[in-house]
Length: 388
Image (tube, rainbow, N blue to C red; front, side):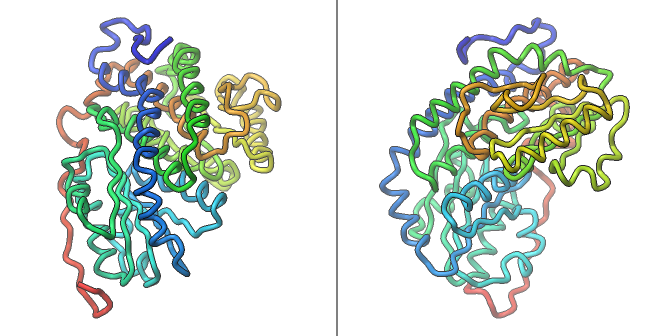
């Protein structure tokens, strides 16, 4: 099945879902195009990164708001583990509200900003604050919108590099799907190097989920399930957070979702479980981490029944009745997350359709918006530490 083939849903069922469905299905193709964009700019990108990555005490901060913030949670441990560099994930919503705390260290800093539109107030405010508070700061802007404020502001700045995603990654639907996965992939490639064989492997795995698992996942979107819990470890913990948000967004909050780490879930959050709860566990590819993920799968299956615990894994050897994604042998969790998130996207879309929602626009009254509105950015009271 190709990206252009339509997932079998009735026309009535798909009403209000066509855009989101298309943008979920197009992702493997978008990943190839995003990889090509990074590869085409490799020399300039490496030259830019070389100006900052060799600095002593370098701090790399991955930032964004909402879904874009969760990209940082995925890539930070993935890049740190492979490069040995200090990489942190701090949401723009934290940087803007508490700049003194999160930008307290005036050390050489690379701020990596993720933004679908580049127009959210916090995205623009965060880079301004970094410029004001830090003596030595560079910006890598990864965005899907060439006309966004963030991309235009830094397009000609010698201390910045703007990496634009393919046009189709600028999702027209309410929820971030192609934009999330393409920016995640591009950031990993930017820091870890071009990997065309790996991109093909990941894209093929994504196609496999879309072709072979959609119907089974749609069946799990039972209107009787009122809560869905997503669990993961390391980079997959941030994936669990994004998955929970996707379900809340597309169902307009009619299905309540939670997220946690495999170990953290026992420490109180496990209280959320009831007879109307589905649990999705993302199983790590790392053997040590994987042991903890499998422990929680076994524990939860015993507690609430195997049918209500879905393990998503890249290896079928350790666990029965899992959703096994083929072709991801020896792929690290950062890259695996790009494929695994499709599971949550399909579940979220299917729940929304089963509830009669309109996931392309879940909030027709405008109570929640595609690009956040109503945020007042309060002027930072300079205290003598800033440059500007």
